[in-house]
Length: 412
Ligand SMILES: Cc1ncc(COP(=O)(O)O)c(C=O)c1O
Image 1 (cartoon, rainbow, N blue to C red):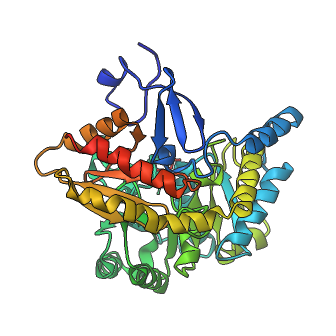
Image 2: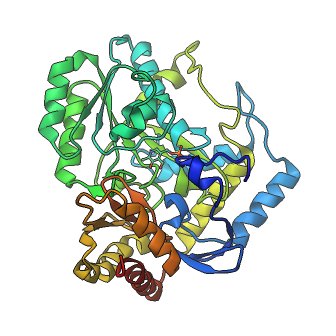
């Protein structure tokens, strides 16, 4: 028994028998007994460049020896966050954007919500406090993210809403967004949070038309379009951001995960030139927000090397190609009785929707059985298995992944 309290875990069970991953290489991880597992989920959607990248580790070690970190409050800075912010802005839909760092996706979402409200206060529209969010959405677990979440079990049990003024609408219905705006009053809308492809809620893509329509509706109401790209950012959707791929112009983009591929915790918000302008142009105006590790020096070095690797090895194009390859490889699994259908994602994303029916235990049993067969996945919202492999996965390994999943699912 250990003192470690696992996230999202039934500790009464888990404390006695944690499943310990010991090391990793490429698309594989190994337990303490040396057994190999193909990582079909890239850990929690982030190990995009694969395990064992000496180049990242060496750069981080060199930075940590020179200066592990120095804070960035007021006018302090170190070079890596400045360089990384410039590179991120350059590949975002608005090269004039500004980047505010935190330590992960939940920091990013709560920063974005506060930034939006602070922006509206600064421009004289303080009544804009209402955010729209979508069913099945996952926006992290800080107070704003929890309340913005579209899966009820994650929201309840706290004696009420953690944050007020949030309206949740169906995830794929643009008209519902229009109605929500009318109902709250356009003048009260601060913005909408949209995952371009719903991730933890089951990998649920929407049409490009939905995304552009909703963006126009919210912008026409005077609110901000906030693209939560914690999963889709840094290549997973087949472009630097899904916003680039779908021709969107978000006011704010949240990112985390793939920016450092797990070699260090890092996340942030990309604020468009328009949203950043009051803060950068108005003497005396300050966003009184930030974290000890906003712009953590060594974490930002990891981000810079990850961007080098993505560019040099053409891994964003590889993620785009994986969309078809994964779907084609998984489609034959539809013949298994426990599989309802294979859901195609965008880029390196797909879901195996299980035929759950009344059997609520099936998703967890399916994930456990796949693990026993040597492939790691995860049960997501709505009873689907997550498929989000590292971008370096070869066509042969895609085939191996499908075979291991079949072995895990066929005897259930
Ligand atoms: C879309 C989205 N937003 C926010 C988060 C929260 O990120 P983190 O767990 O790094 O706090 C996640 C995590 O999975 C996510 O998928």
